[in-house]
Length: 345
Image: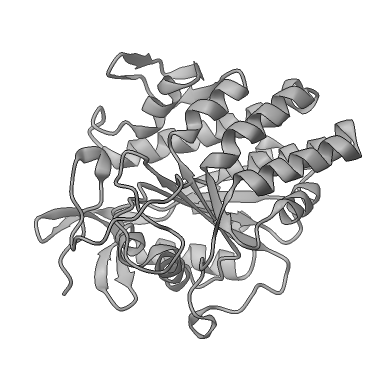
């Protein structure tokens, strides 16, 4: 069996095996991308052609593209026939060593946050499923390991293949965000109202249970912290979901949608921190945004991949998969009926 792979840069761990370090632009997590989609849509709906064109150019020119984001086609599930879309979001940390994500080779880059965004075929619901970074799963060609080891072993292609094998559905797009991007994003929006599941303190910041207005370094601290909680990553995932929910509510608010300057500032601030697959350009983003134009926050559902507690392998803590719960989620994804899966609501 492969040695357990420790990939938590925030904790100061060093990944093994060591690999060649290369320089790359910062990397990215998704629902930020959903906000960019809304921004492109707003440019069309509120201001008109010239402004929308500038916004699209800002997105395409600012984002980094992954040359090889997906595994070999022969290893992949078939595309969905019902129009559903699955987007894999990964969150990274610029405090990690500079690496490359432009090829399928090994990387020291950490992916401390992973989310699957499922947009149903009729565009009436969006599901955001957090995938625990320590989830112990088979990684093709590498045996069983923590799921965030896949990126370190084989970049985006191996990560996509691992998630596709786990869930049994095709990943249509990939987006990665550097946590540092949260700071500029929240500032551009004038802060994000986040309903914290519980009160806690970290460093100089104290967050109350309930509403908090987060901006800059405070927002970054909120989504990063795990040591303040007895259940560590489980609570951190809940906090990240709360942040994304607050982000969506802020972007979809009238104060944002009717303010072209705020939208432009948001897209400009975020684009340099976004890395996406080659097919996810402004045109694709605008098309998805238009198809989701009637979505409300109530139609966005947040949940976590079913788990069965924690364990230990090779002295490292892992999170076990709840196989029965996972099968229900897989069936919901395959048939585009997640809305009927209790775990997803």
